[in-house]
Length: 188
Image 1 (cartoon, rainbow, N blue to C red):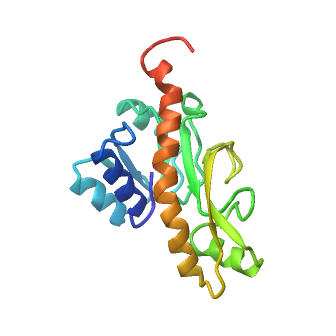
Image 2: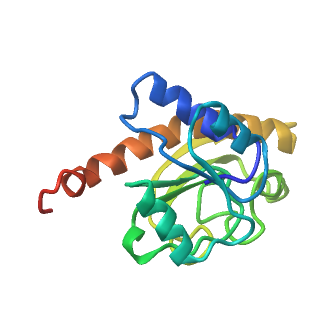
């Protein structure tokens, strides 16, 4: 699920093409017409544009229709109503070391500006399981990077995104491995 440029989608597609993690992007849901949706369509991935907040029943129907095991938020900028059947199976990546600099309105450069304004010496990214509020679900993993003297929000964002490119595929692989017994029909 995405809302913008699709650079996280590009990163994940690059990783899947190289075989890591063992995953297949079966559906892209965009919150608006955007470059990310264009990337998905160009890659022949079924793509649906759902403007605004998607009701849980509608989201669940789309996910079921496409036999989705794991939902990955890749720059999706709406609070998600997680369908009950997908609880614990929705991941988000946030450009800070949560719980710092999370919550409503804390995305993109807003986060990096806040880190710099607070005088942070270290930042990074957090992959977490989504719940009913912004950025409060259990952490899957974090990757860290320094805040350097003279950093601008844009420079810091670029450094954090390099960590995101590593963190998200690793977290997806971990979560998919933990779901494998359910996916194969074995009891867990």
